[in-house]
Length: 338
Image 1 (cartoon, rainbow, N blue to C red):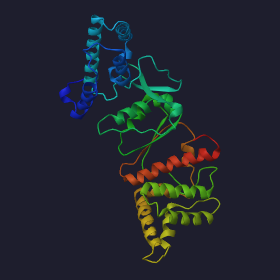
Image 2 (cartoon, rainbow, N blue to C red; image 1 turned 90 degrees about the vertical axis):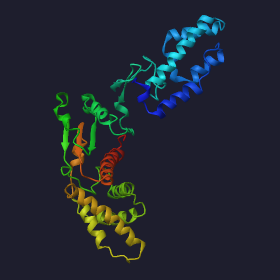
Image 3 (tube, rainbow, N blue to C red; image 1 turned 180 degrees about the vertical axis):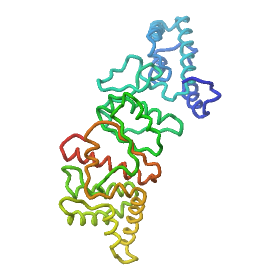
Image 4 (cartoon, rainbow, N blue to C red; image 1 turned 180 degrees about the horizontal axis):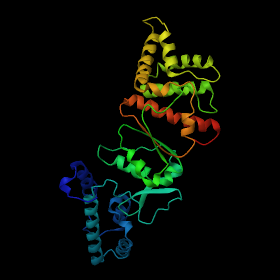
């Protein structure tokens, strides 16, 4: 990642200039033990420990600080290392592990190379932890994701569910090595029973989870109690083979007649506004009193891409969280590690 300094953002160049120039010890003078220790400990961007010959030269200078030739050679090397760090334009230049210094577990999947020629990737056993991939538009997030999702070893081991607002992952269907592992769903394809709990989870536990998901997704923390009460009432009266739909929950809330000036009425209107809009944007997927869609989906590995091109962000947050909490609760109450 080298380039012309004039094309790099001024802020990034200033970061390196301040780090390497203003705080850098003067290297043209003879380097004492203290100064060499400071170079090694406080300036990882110089990457002096990467090269065994540089370490040998440091040992020579430490053994004989008056060796003018060794001192001059070390000063030239340090100047070159400083130029490499600045010209890289990479704020993580000093953080990359040394070549050959990392041992990777058997379930490691390489998806790229660091400047030190060390592979970078993910460990399958750690994919159930939280991971955040951020960056501005055009920075390569989708390309990075595609490289990861094109790995057959990954898709043969775990179920991956991706919600996308653009049809940018459909071409994975044409990758021969992924044959049979990729499924594309349109927004209306999932068949979800809104209040049906995962296997092994009690009705009241799932009702509480749904209320929390709603509150977190829409920022309606005060109104979640009203939604929870009505949902629990519906769950208590449900038939043995069916569960309250989202439409039924909306209907019960609409029939509620609190005083128009009461706080409960404000909560009712707040909940109804969100749920009605959710129904309007995603109506077909919630029309079921019972469904095994999620159970079948998570029963086998592979990639499921759900295209939600027109759904507002708050509804996408609710839908994605609903999927995640469903599988989390299923594993939690079945005794399996989430």
